[in-house]
Image (tube, rainbow, N blue to C red; front, side, top):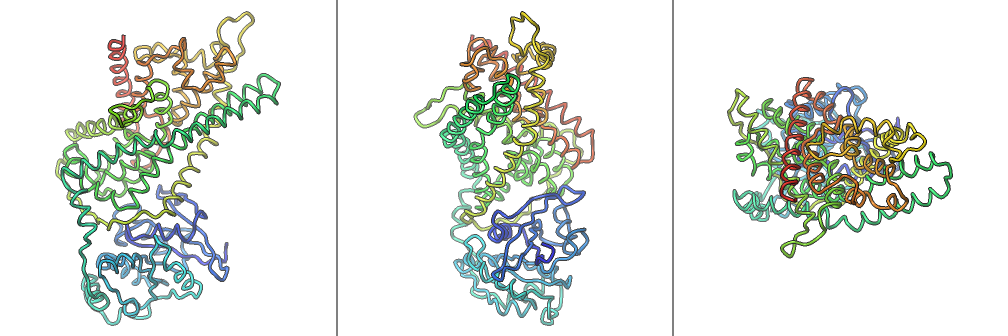
Amino acid sequence: MSDALRIALVGNPNCGKTSLFNHLTGTRQKVANYAGVTVERKVGHFELPSNKAVRVLDLPGTYSLNATSPDEAITRDVCLGKIDGEREQDAFLCVVDATNLKLHLGLVLEILELGRPVLIVLNMMDEARRRGIQVNTQRLSERLGVPVVETVAVRHSGIENLMNALDQQKFMVPQTELSGLKGSHHQKIQMILNDVVHSVDQADPRSDFLDKIFLHPVLGLLSLAILMFVVFQSVFAWAAPFMEMIESFFGWLGETVGTYISQPLLHSLVVDGIIAGAGSVVVFLPQILILFFFILVLEESGYLPRAAFLLDKLMFKAGLSGRAFIPLLSSFACAIPGIMATRSITDPRDRFTTIMVAPLMTCSARLPVYALLIGAFIPSQTVWGIFNLQGLVLFALYMAGILSALCVSFVMKFFQKDKSQHALLMELPSYRFPDVRSVGIGLLDRGKIFLKRVGGIIFALSILLWFLCTFPQPPEGATLPAIDYSFAGMLGHVIQPIFAPIGFNWQICIALIPAMAAREVVVAALGTVYALSATGDDAVAQGLSHLISAEGTGWSLATGLALLVWFVYAPHCLATLATVRRETGSWKTVAVMTGYLFGLAYLMSFITYQLAVRILV
């Protein structure tokens, strides 16, 4: 690809840049970090009609080259040619929202002043016409001195024209001094708008109507609560048939492969260690994809900035700001990108607080644990005629994390000297139908990431745990299950007294150790431990949820509830702690976060277990 045409997409947030990137590249894209920083680099490839290869770089959205965050600094440095590996771009494609030229032309003028080859992509033209905004594309091209191509990124319209323009290499260094325009950027923008935009009717009746609901102080909060409730209900209701199919497949795979392995230890490694460990995690892929689906749809529709605006005053009372909403919502998928997203928060106080509470958001890694325990102990029944009881419990766990985050940030507020409120200024994009292609690609990427974790860290830890649970072998005449005599069994029995007050048996104690690498590993760990400690073929064949809820396993409803609460708080993710260290540059912050999260986990689990034992007796 050394002779490929190298282009970079640059534009304001919410301009449709990422949708355009997805339409151009499809699944031929990769995400990695820039060297030495935590900002992601998204690179894709596609071919032009002439079969010319193109490498396209999707730069982080920015309103200006005067960077105020690490994301914006990357965009600035790439545009200035300061980053190794990205110094030579054949062209910059400036993606502009046709419905908001006044805001977006500011960045365009800064890019043009760099004297680099540029092609203007005038996006969302269908929305502009629907709102009565007429843009004279030819006149705009003459004013800016570079070619302009009209597109509708989310509808694939105009993509062919863009491909032809790239094929003909119509991008160019600005050929005019903005037609003799003088004055500040603001004055130049106004003169351009007066010349190229006509019959403007900025009012959008559809957005105005929806904003009356979603931004209303009462109806907006009610709508948000209902929306989140529907999401958590759907995670269980929609995923159930797919989970059953995956569970049946891995059960069949274990039995089939097992028939060809006669050596007992190898049979145990493959069936109980590898297949049981990986299968017990993969089964939750449908639930994770459904959760990501809703997050992507909300992001694509333009709802998320409004939710941030709506919650600003409420979050400030708890020591946060509306800017924290999107990083915290991202943390529901994974705390790592959520913590990294705090780079967009310019106020150090707000950013620090958001980082500290981000792990309390219920990330997708907790979902397999929740699903396992809820499926084992909570009946699958309908309450009040319409609600799934398991979904209600899942919703309660999510709410527990949210309320706890608000309480922690409220406490932190009293230890901070600066108690002033910082105004929330952000663009509210027009509502739009989500781009099916972008949502599909996003789900595919997240599915690959999840499966890669299963194939990587979880696979390796499953084998390590199998070894610890298998060796040393039990002595002759042993009467207990073999795992009791293993390294893992010994360690589990040693630390079990520490966790006895919160109802954890030694099997749970074993599983909590590898779970420090990744929360979802606890499911694979429990699968391995119970598969190896089962006393008969029938027990091995049962699902893990049936095993832990069966008589004689040391589990009770109180134990299950305490473990659920434990995972609401416990910092079982070394990658998250490493990200906190990298983002804050402080081991002290990591130590404080680890200590307070483990303390909360033990305290809340203790309260839950003791209350449950007394109430359920």
